[in-house]
Length: 117
Image (cartoon, rainbow, N blue to C red):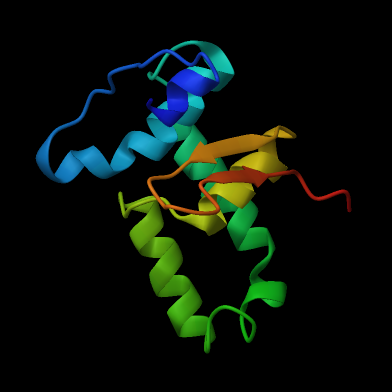
């Protein structure tokens, strides 16, 4: 049995092809927030803004240098694959819980909650 069917989720096809396919995390978030994929770019940019506001916390913890942080942010703004940091940023920015079902054998249901700060 597919894991998604355990939760009675329905499958949604996302637009994007080739090098544009990495946008799916943001298309999925847009779809869940507004019922349409059309706002994926705005979701991406707001997630990046959220991450940028955390620069002081992240440089030295997740990024060795400010330059590495800026390179990450630049790539993310330009269509890099979304990651756990962007999932956390989406949860924080929109005040929502984000659930991810993975293909891993264990720890396959991930939950990202907005910080309570």
